[in-house]
Image 1 (cartoon, rainbow, N blue to C red):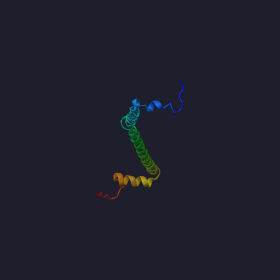
Image 2 (cartoon, rainbow, N blue to C red):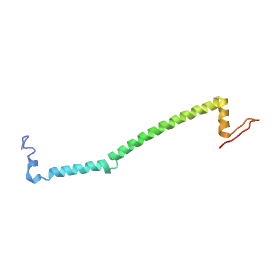
Image 3 (cartoon, rainbow, N blue to C red):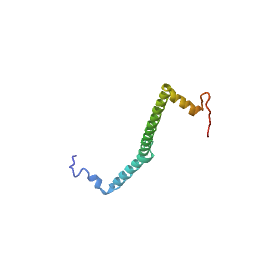
Image 4 (cartoon, rainbow, N blue to C red):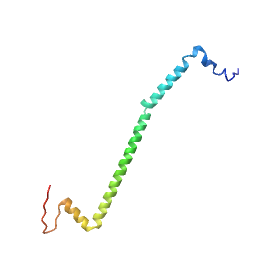
Length: 105
């Protein structure tokens, strides 16, 4: 039995199938809402994870710049005696013999 293009969808227009289109719409809406909000890998979880990754990347960049600054400071302390002496005096309150030390807090 061969049907023409017009007759192929005639079964949808029959009055006893009036429930089909609303049923499909409701099922599609429920599935879409489930995927958007309630599923384990929902869109909201994906967006939260993306924001968290971007925040972590910013934090990594900040920490890397701090590490670079500290490496430069360590290099200066190892190679420059004056900077090492200034660091020891300011941090540990070291003094040369004969110096008067006044600590103001």
